[in-house]
Image (cartoon, rainbow, N blue to C red; front, side, top):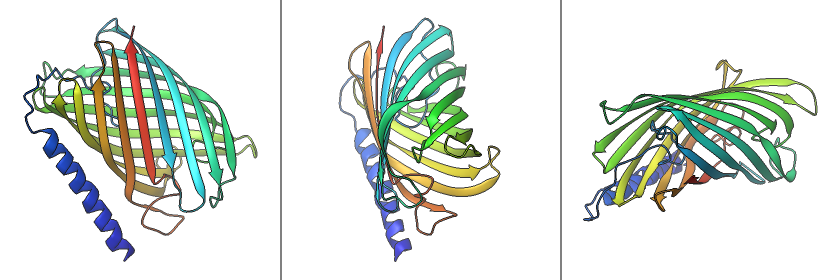
Length: 295
C-alpha cells in the first residue's frame, strides 16, 4: 500500500507540472522579453552570468521542513554581493544566518536558535553562450564555511565546495527554456561537541523548465534527484531523494527581480531507515524565495 501511495503521489506531481507547463505555453498575446537564466530558477542554475561590469545585491530565504517524526523546521537566509569583472565570469560573496526549530526528531538533539551561519564565495564561468551556440554551458564552484551541521543544527565547523555544471537551451525562442545541472558537493564536518571529523558528499542532477506567460513573468517547475554518501569521494551510499515542484519568476523593473520555488520529496530511501522517503539525509518539503537588485 505504501508503494502504491508513493506511486500515486509521483503521478499526481508529474501530472500537475505538465499541466502547469501546458498552460504556461498557451499564447497570451503579450510581448516576450529575451530570456536571462541567471536567476530564473529556484533550485536549478542557469548558464547566464550577467553582463561585464554588472553589480547586484541578492538575497534568499530557504526553508526545509518535516522529518519522519517530531517537529523539524530549518531555514537559511543569505545576503550576497555579485560582480561580473569581465565577460562570462561571475563572482559572488555571501553571508548567511540560520534558524533551527527542532523537537522530538529521532536521532536529533532539540535545537531552538538563530545565529550567523557562515560565509561562501561563488565563482562561475560561462563557456558557451546561447546567443552564439546551440545551448549555454557554464561551470561553477562555491567554497563555503559553516558554523553548524546543516541538517541537525548541532555546533560544528563545516567546510565544503559545491561544484555544478549547468547547461540550458531555449525550446521555444524567447518563450520556453530548459536547464540541466550536474551536481557534486563534497564537504567535511568537525563536531564541536566530540571533535570528530565526518566527511560526506552529495551528487545529483536537476532539471527545470520555465515558460514566459507575460513580459518578464515566467512559471514552470523543477525536479531534482540527489544521492547522499558517507565520505567526500562518494564512498558509502547513505540515501537518495527525488524532489519536484513549481517555480515562478517575475522581473519587477529593469533593476529588480523576484523568484519563488517549492519542492517536495516524492520518492526516496535512506539506508539507515525504512520507508519510501529519505527523511534522514533530506527533508519532506523545501521552499525558496530569491530576490535581487542591480546597482
